[in-house]
Length: 124
Image 1: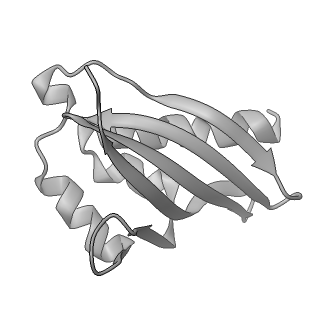
Image 2 (image 1 turned 60 degrees about the vertical axis):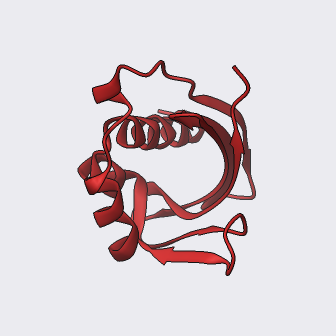
C-alpha cells in the first residue's frame, strides 16, 4: 500500500468517526498526544484527545439523524517520509468544517497529530 493510500485510509477513518460520533474510530485516526484547536471561539479553543473524545461520545451522531455525508479530501501533501498535511472538509448539522490536519508516521502508522479547523454555516 502506498503512503498516499495509508493517509487516505486514516482520513476515511476520521470521517467515519465524526459521522458516527465513534471515539474508537477516532482513536485509531488520532495520535494519543494530538491537539484539537480553533480560533473561531474566544478564547482560543485548545483540547487534548482526553478532553475531546468524551465530548464526541456525548454527541448525537450525524448518522443517527440520517444526515447526508459531505466528506471531501481537498488535498494531501507530504513533507517527507513521516510528515503529511491534509486539508479536508466535512459537515455536521448546519455547519461546515474546514480542517487542516497534520499527520505523522510513527511505528509505521500514520496518525493525525493536530487538527486546526474553521467553522462556517453551510449555505443550503
